[in-house]
Image (tube, rainbow, N blue to C red; front, side):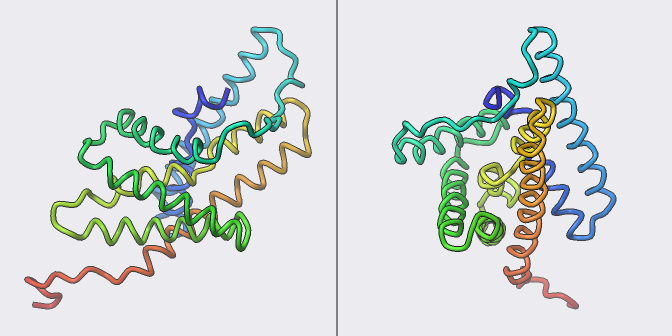
Length: 216
């Protein structure tokens, strides 16, 4: 179910809203957060309607882990395919494909290394900070894509919208402990990404215009 719903899951909106709220942009952050939560609830209601129409018992709404039967290199390579799909979905120019792919693998690599060393939450924080800093630095050269475009691919690798949908559907299926565990993970990951994005932006020195210095 989740792969089909992934395009509609508002993980990017939730993380962006949290980043705006943490950064002090209260109005835009609150509006974006409410909009993202409404979208998530609509998906949740749609799942429940589908269950009711087909006569499927709600106990079937449980996230079960599948046995890992794919090579690690297949999984790594699949993120390049994901980036191509992202370009097609959002109409990003093909000349940006290399930059997007590089930052996707940067976010994945830093997150994987950080998770192995210091745990999932800290690894996600470091990955978000590295992504924000890299996108900011790369966008400063003439002819480079805007920061938002560079940021897009790596941002999607860290978002947690599907985790929120899993939490709601698990709760609807009567799996209360599992659902609340996913819900707490969802809140933690979204907040961690937001704080990491702001930390990464703060690490990069402010851009100085050499032709028209401040105060000239």
